[in-house]
Image (cartoon, rainbow, N blue to C red; front, side, top):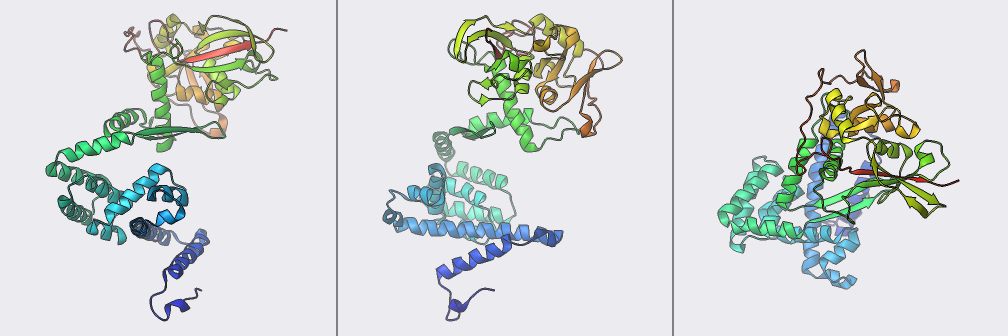
Length: 447
C-alpha cells in the first residue's frame, strides 16, 4: 500500500515518516466503522488514545528543539509563542502553555519517557511541568522521579495532582503560593454569541474562584430524579443560568445606570399577542428572540408601556408595573407549595399565566400556577400544558408526541406560608417588595 523504498538503505528520513503517518491516518479515517465489531472498536479506541499521547510527546519534543534553535525567528515571529499561535491557529495563551510544557519536559526525562511511551497523558504531564517550572532546579529531578513512580502505580490525573501538591508543600510551601499567583494572573473569561443566538462562555479561574464556582455548580446541576433526561453538560449549562437568575433576583448586584441589573426584552404589543406583523422581540444584549421567549418572561415581570411614533421615536414611557404582586405570589406559594411540574421549591419558581395576560388572561390565583424555570420553558417552547386535577390543582402534562406520563413528584399538601426574608437574603421569589430580574417593555404604536 505504501512506497517504502526510502527505508531500504536504513532509517527513513523524517519527511517520509510524516508522510507515512498521514497516509495511515487517511486510511483509518476512511474506514467504514459499521463493519468493525464492537470488541475491536473498543481495542482501537484504547490503542489510539495511547498513540495520541505518544504523538503529543513527539510534537512537544520537536517544539522544544524548534525553540532552542530560535527557528521561529526565520518565519518573522518574535517568539516561539507567536510563531506557534500563527502556525497552528492557537490563541496566544494556548501557545504559551504548550511552549512552556515543551521546555519543561525537556528537563524531566522520566516524565517525558512515560508520555512518549503512552503511559502518561498530556494532562498528567502538565500537572508535573506546571509545578516543575516553579520548583528549585535542584529539586526537579526528585519531582520527576516521584511523578513517574506515581503514574507507574496506575493513578489518575486527580491523584497525581494530589501527590504533586503534597510534594510541593513538603519541598517548599511557597511553591503552592507561587502557583496560586500564577493561576490568578492567568484568570480570564470570554463570551461569544453563535448564529443561533446561543452564548459560548470560556473561563479560567484561580483555585479559590474555581472552587466556589464548582461548589455552586454541583449544588444546582444534580439530576432531577430518574425522569431527568438532560445530559451532564446540559445540567451544568442550566445550573449556570440558574446561578445568574438567582444573582439577578437577589438584589445584591451593583446598580447599572441607576437601576438593578435585569434582563430586558423590547416587544411590540401585537407580537406579544401573537398577531404577527410586528418586529421580533429583542434583548438588550442578544438581539432578536422568539415570541414565546418574550411571552414566557412576561408571565412574571415588570412591564413598562412605551408609546412609539414610527420605528424608533418614543412618545411616552409609562411606569413599570408588576404582572404579579408580592401578595399574590405569597398566596400562590401557599396554594401550590412547589413547582407544579417537577416539585422544585418555590424559590426556584415564577408565576405562570395559564391564559396570558396579554391575551386577556386575568392575573389572579385561578389563572396562575407556580413553575420552575425549566418547566416554564417547556410550557412556552415545547408544547407542555397545565391541567387541573380533581382537587383543582394544576399538573404539568407532556405533549402526546413524547409518550410520557405526567410528572408526579409533587407535594400532596400545601407549603407553609413563607416567611419574609431580609433584603440581604431574599431568594427573589417570595415575600417583601418584589425586585424583578425580568423586565418587559411593550411598544405600542398609535394608529
